[in-house]
Length: 257
Image (cartoon, rainbow, N blue to C red):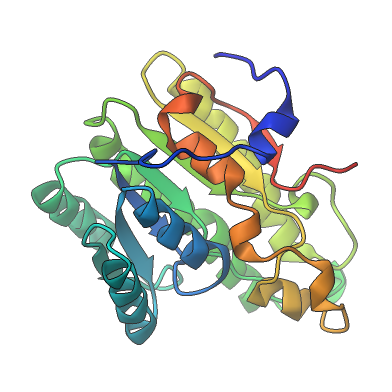
């Protein structure tokens, strides 16, 4: 694994024009927030984006926006990460193999907050739902995508973490637990793929204007948080060729001063 001399360099990384030319990148959770902003930016940098999300009208709107901006024709895959069974993930693998032949990037942006509640009062059913979306689904999607990633000459997997995925905080319950587990899943996968040309990294976007942030901090001044398109630098770094050999890192989009 190559070491990055200064983590600040990743958070301030500037993507060159055409950085992602001819790359095929699947992004989950693209109908809002960071996932949507990332899909638009990846397409602008030349990537063929595969848009995975629940809401078809929003997927279609994003598809049209990318095409109208001159980006490569994206693929649309309506998918409910909370309820979909393993067999459907396998079908996606077959479809993507037939259509694209490989995956150069896989980014897990989909997420679910659940509720902010003490553990002793946490809704058990909601706990399962959050873990399904935030942990089980990324595992299943990565598991299904591995044969496609192995067909790439320069594959990259990016997981989205959180500040509460590194240090537990009262009342964050299932969300915090799921993000701790994502950090562990990424480390395991990075270690397992250490000797093949694949990199696996996690990114904590920090305070960003998303639905999850608004739900968690309803009284917060939204102007204090970054816009989704302002936290993309590490994602672009890890998806492009400049990060070859850089794996098993857990970085912040907005480093603490």
